[in-house]
Figure 1 (cartoon, rainbow, N blue to C red):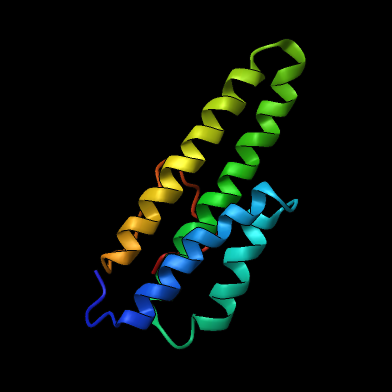
Figure 2 (spheres, rainbow, N blue to C red; figure 1 turned 30 degrees about the horizontal axis):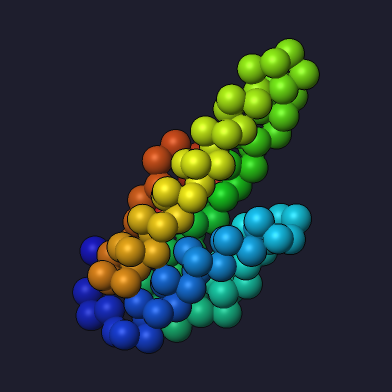
Length: 118
């Protein structure tokens, strides 16, 4: 856990996670929303930096899993995976929001580490 997390840090950390919901309205918004906030605030706050890295790693991993599931949908089993991934995304994003509001960085499950967590 990062020491001395301010209210502003918590708010921006929460915003990093919550902005990924844009993906349900805008293609690739689940990556672009957190990416924009992370790029704006990562130098100012170690907490926001860690939240952004965690969120982006998960969303990029999820994108890969969705692409694979889309291919598998042609043989019938991918649809189940797509539903499971959508539920996983919703649940994990809400948990991330809750953790950020408590001043903790949420570590998503099933995440490929594209961006180093230091």
